[in-house]
Length: 99
Ligand code: SF4
Ligand code: SF4
Image (cartoon, rainbow, N blue to C red):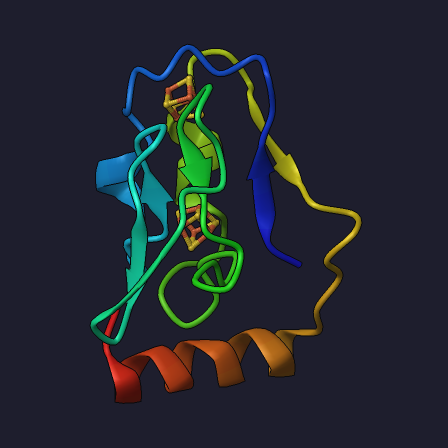
């Protein structure tokens, strides 16, 4: 499953640099996949573009952003459960189209 940022976030952006998929964006910023822009998913705090998050599968054993967060604002998104195979396929898709 992807991970999600909750209201505990203070938008310090410590997590952003840790993401191998460039899935983490500042509040209000559009996100981008393969050169296509999509509307921001939060105006209030740093957010994760769920269609770019592989839970770090394909890069690391653990989600890097969760470890980096000082306020424990990042949690598994129970509404977006994905298997390891699906997460790997997502990673390979991003490899192809660009992050
Ligand atoms: S779990 Fe990994 S891929 Fe997903 S947002 Fe966090 S650092 Fe990025
Ligand atoms: S590290 Fe935590 S508090 Fe900082 S921007 Fe990321 S989610 Fe928000």
